[in-house]
Image (cartoon, rainbow, N blue to C red; front, side):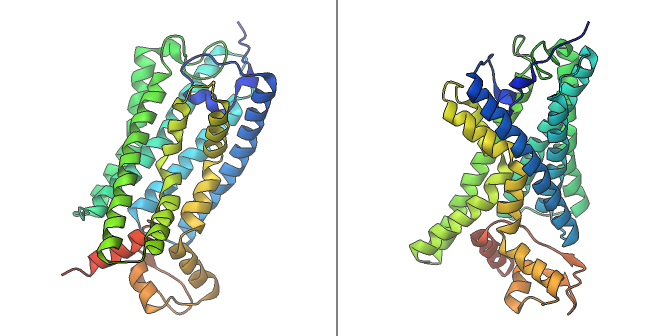
Length: 326
C-alpha cells in the first residue's frame, strides 16, 4: 500500500521534535525554505572544508575528526534532501530513515571525537602511537552510531518511518534513539568547550594580558570551536511554541557545513598562513613555523607534512607554550 509522506513538514526542526507539531502555513513555508537553502550552502561549505584539509595537507587528529564530520554531514544532508521527496513505498521510507539516523548520528559522534581529542591535547595526554588514537576516534565516529542504529532496528524496527515523515516515530518514542544521544553528546561537548575557555582565560590571566586581548582570545576560540561541537543542537529542546528558536535552530544547523568552513577553517590564521605558503610560495616566518609545527617545507610552499590543530588564537599560544616547557 502506497505511503503518502507530507514533505511540507520536512524542515530541519522535526529532527528534534518529541511531539507532533503543526506550525502555521507561512511559518512552515519559511522553515522549509531556510532548510533547503541552508542545506545547499552547507554541502558546498563541507565540500570546501574537506578539499582544504586534503589540499594543505594537514596531519592532525582534530582535523581528521572535522574532515570525517563534514563527510558524514554531506551524506546526511543529501539523504535528508532525498527523503524530503516522499517515497511511495514503506520499505524505501524505512531504509531512508535508517540512513538518516546513522549519518546524522555520525555527525554528532565525530564532534564527540573532536572533543575527546581536545581534552587529551589540553591535558597533555596525547601519548602512544597515532594509529591507536585514530582507531579510537574512528570507533567513536563511525562505529558508535552503527551500534545505536542496529539496536534501534532490533528493539523498535517499526519506529523507522511513520505515516507523516521518513523519520523515527514520535508515537512509540523511537525518536529518542536520536534525540537522546544528540543531547548527551552536545552536553559533553558544551562542558569541554567551557573547560577549554576556562583554561585559556586562566593562561591569559597568568601572562597578565590586557583584558581586551583576553576577551579577543576567548571570542576567537569560541567562534572556532562552536561549529564543530554541535552545541546549537540543544536549541532543538526548546518547545516548538517558541517559534523564534525554531528559526535559529534551522538557520544554524541546516547551514552547518558553511559555518564550519567559514568559522573553523577560514577564520583560523593558521590555515590562512598555510594557504598563502601553498598558493604563493611564501614560506612562513620562524614564529609561524613554530606555531604550525612544520615538519618539512620548501621555498616553493610544497608542504610535505604538518602538525596543526585549529583551536583558536589563544589556545594555539597555550599549545606552543606547553611544547616549550622543560
